[in-house]
Image 1 (tube, rainbow, N blue to C red):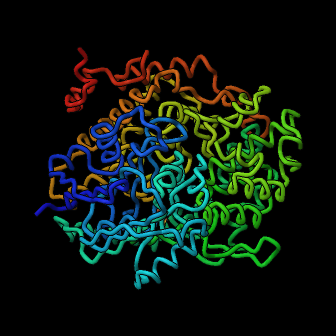
Image 2 (image 1 turned 90 degrees about the horizontal axis):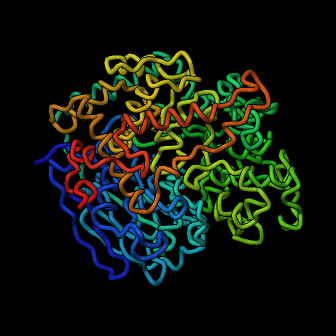
Length: 626
Ligand code: SF4
C-alpha cells in the first residue's frame, strides 16, 4: 500500500462519454510528485502541442499535489493545467479551497479531461462512482447558484464543486476555474478550455482518506502551524487579521504598489482600499481552505448601491490592486463588486483588472475614445465606468468583447500604438508586484513558462519570514539586502528559488505557510516514508520546470518570448522609488546568466539535451535529437 498518493488518475473523454484509470507508480510520484508534474507529464506525453487550445484535442488536467488533502495547514491546493488559450503554451494555475482535498478523499490523485461534449455536462464523482450528467439547466447561471443547485441535486451538502462561470462558457480568454465558488485558478485562461469542452462543473464527494506513512509527524507539523498563530507570529497574525490585503500598506510604503497601470508605485487612495480599512468597514468574516488555521480569506458584504453579496467571498490583495490602485480606484465597495462579478461569472481578477487599466491609460492618452469604448469614459479613478466595462467583458459585448480577449490581443486589434502600454509576458497580464522594487522578480516574470506569474516566482520580499530564510541558508540562499541586484550571485539565488517554487507547485502547498524548506522536506518524508532530501526536492522542481519549457518549445514559444514588459525599463513616476527603473542591458545580461545556469539554450529557450538527461528526462524526444 503506497503512502501519500493513490496511484490513480481518472481519465474522462467528453467526446465518447467513456472513462478509465491512468495508473502511476511510486517511481513516478517520486520523480514528478504531482501538481505541475502531472500537468507537464500529460501534456508532453499525450497531447499534440500544436492543437487548438479551445479544440477537442486540448487536455484539461486537474492535479492534486502530493500534499493535497493531507490533514495540515496549506494542504488544500490543487493545480489546473492545459495548453493555455491566453499564452499558447504551458498553462497551469493553482487554487485553494476544499475541492482538491475532497478529490483525494475520493481516491483520485487527479483528473484528465479529454475531448469535447456536444452539450453542457457536469462530471459527478463519488469515490469510485463516475458519471457524466446533463448540465443544460446550469448553463448561463452564476457560480453560487450552480454550487447550490448541485448540492441539492446530489442531495449532499458536503459535495465540493469546481466550475466555470458564464465567462468561461463564452470563452473569454481571461476566464478562470473556481473551487467552492470563490477560490480561483485564475491564470492562463483555463476557464475557456473547460468552457470549450462544455464541461460546466465537476462535483466530488469522497469518503476515504489518504494513507500517510507517519501520521504523528504530520500532526506535529499541523500543530506547529497552529501554535505559531497562537503565539502571535506577526506575519501569520497579519494574514489572519487582515488577509492578503493586509500587506498592501507594506507595498505602498515601499513604493511598489502598482498604480495607474504601473506608471506609479504609490497610490494616494491606498488607505481606503487596504485590508485594515476592509476590516473596519465591509468585512463580514474570514474564510479558509481545507485544514488551514490561518484563515486568510475574506468575506465581505455591502448594503450600499453596490450590494456586494458574501457568497462570493471578498477581494484578495491581487484583486484589490488590479481593480483598485492599478485603475486608480479608491472605492473599496466598488472593488468588492468587481470581485463579486468576477467570481460569479468566472473571470480572472488580475488579467481583467489589468486589461481595464490598460484601456484607461490608452483612453487618457487619447489613443482610445468614447467611440471605441461604447460611450464609457474609461478614465483612471472612475469606479462606475470600470464596473460597466467589466459587465461588458462578461457579456462579450462591444468593447468588452475586445477586452475579453486579454490586453495583448485587444491592443493588436486596436493598433494606434496601444501595444506599448500592455504589461504582459507571453500575452498574459502581469500580476500586482512591481519588479522595480525587487529586480530579480523580473527574471521570474520573463522566464516563467506560464507567462507573467506571481505564484511561480521569486519573492525576495521585505516580509519574507525569518523561518523560511533560515531554512534556505544551508543552500547558500540568503535574504537579499539589495533588491536592485541582477548580479550572477543573485541569478544563482533566483535559480534556486524558482526551482524551489516549482517543487511547491508539484507538492501543492500554499506558499503563504511558514514551513521552512527543511520542514517541507520532512512533510514529504512523513507523507510517503521516502528518505527524501532537499537536493531531491530541488531536482524535482528543476525537472518539472524543464518539462514545461520543453512543452513551450513544442508550442513555438522560445527565448524571444522571455521578454519582460518594457514599462519596467521606465522610471517609476512617484514615491520613495521615483526614478527607479530596471536597466535593459543589465536585464539582458542577467537573463543570459540565468539561462546558462539553468542549462537552457539561449537561442531556443529550451533545455539542452544534456540537461534533460541530467534530469532523468531522457525519454523525451528532445533529449535525443537526430
Ligand atoms: S493561508 Fe490562506 S490561502 Fe493559504 S491555505 Fe490558508 S486560508 Fe488558504
